[in-house]
Length: 339
Image (cartoon, rainbow, N blue to C red):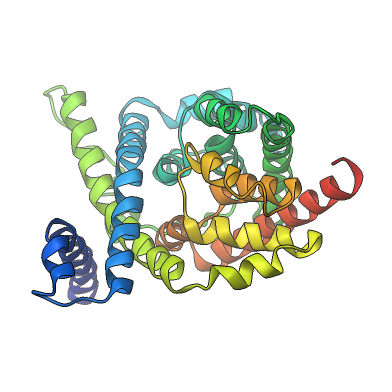
């Protein structure tokens, strides 16, 4: 790693640590700031509260994701992935969506898992299906959506059904755009084989230690982008005039776009977003609520930061455009012909 890259990486780490420490100090001394000992505006205090809320909500799931990623790195071989995945590119889409329905991984944790699976040999488009399907289709999200909308199960059925179908459609479109060309960003060590090729030794490696090492490395790698994304999301939530959006959202056509924008900016965990969506029930249409619940777990602000960090920009921009267009058109069609 050259000096420029090393300094850049060090500066990113330092920024994340300083930002987190600052907001933690602000949080634990909030009464002192309110009393005027160290005057800070209400806007800054609100940013602090939202920022810490997003980070505290996301960290447990990031930990889950990096441990799953580490287990995949240590225990799942490239040969196993190739053996169990269908050879036909389009036939592989359905099993990927089904796999997403099994694993209780929210969007806070899915990126490190998908990144590791692609590095292990999973085709890009299959990884995309898993990326957008798992945060919505998993059992925990289904249960929370049922509880939040138990008086109107239309929202639950539409969310799960749309997520399953759209995940396959999005995966197919991304395959047409990129085939199986590599879209990951690789470090210099990975490109030269220093990370990917194990050291030959007569002593059997301790897999538990290896798992912990990879999990810790992945956590600190992901953590700095989570902090940056949470900070930007907190700024948006604080400074954005929601009354303007609510006025725009009263129209059936524009409400879908407004709720998708809300989902992107709020960056909620998919296992808790149904309760927030339910609070909009008296203001927005059922279709726009469904758009909020489908779009947010597939694409939000904090995850966009992570995607740009670990995937090539062209792929991320294409992914964002495809997900946005597919969800918007599908929800409008649902409102016009079904709801």
